[in-house]
Image (cartoon, rainbow, N blue to C red; front, top):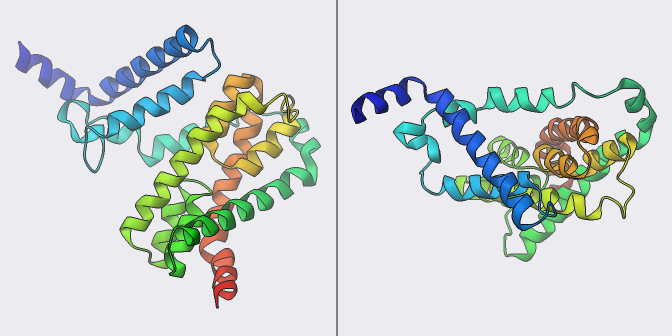
Amino acid sequence: MIDAITTGIQKNDLIVAFLVVGIIMVVSYWISKRFTKGRLPGAAIAIAMGLFLSYFGEEKGLANLPLLSGMAFLGGNMLRDFSIVSTSMGASFSHIKKAGWAGVLSLFVGIMAAFFIGCLIAYLFGYSDILSIATIGAGACTFIVGPVTGNAIGASSEVIALSIAIGVIKTVVVTLLTPVIAKRIGLDNPQTAMIYGGIMGTTSGVAAGLAATDPKLVPYGALTATFYTGLACLLCPSVLYFILVELMA
């Protein structure tokens, strides 16, 4: 009986992965509603639970466990990118046009601020080589930009891993703080959501934070946050890296 169940799970590993993620989401939103009265977003709790559970695996997290091997595909690049793109499907082009140059400017301001603040923090923590500083600075943009930049400029695997960790921390912080500060910064319309997504940049953090604030704002914030990731992947290992080289020369 046990062998039959195990075989069935392994043959339907992707379905099992969806089921496990669904259970995590249900439990997370129940915890949010029951113990925090919605103040702590369910998505943030789910992210924290996912990070905690990843420690039970090795290089690939839970996907290293035979019964949860479907997690490797569910959390892979294809479905990740599909999820990011799908968040923009509900956006209205008329609202996007209203953001105008402010939305475009927010992208460059957000990327440059995150990169150089991350570089400064890396320097203050004792890193002196440009490759490590640039990689950590890129990680402060998002956990995707960090490894892209590190691989492009030849940083060590340890520093690349650190840049990913910094990006994940940023995602969690943005997720938690967005609903708290939303009213204070006027984050209640598509235009400000786009500017906010352009400044913060972390697609998952912005999407989760806006979902806890107002689900209608998610497509707009995720739209510019997605552009942020792509633009940062271009700028960090090239223009911003060379600016950093000149500054530290």
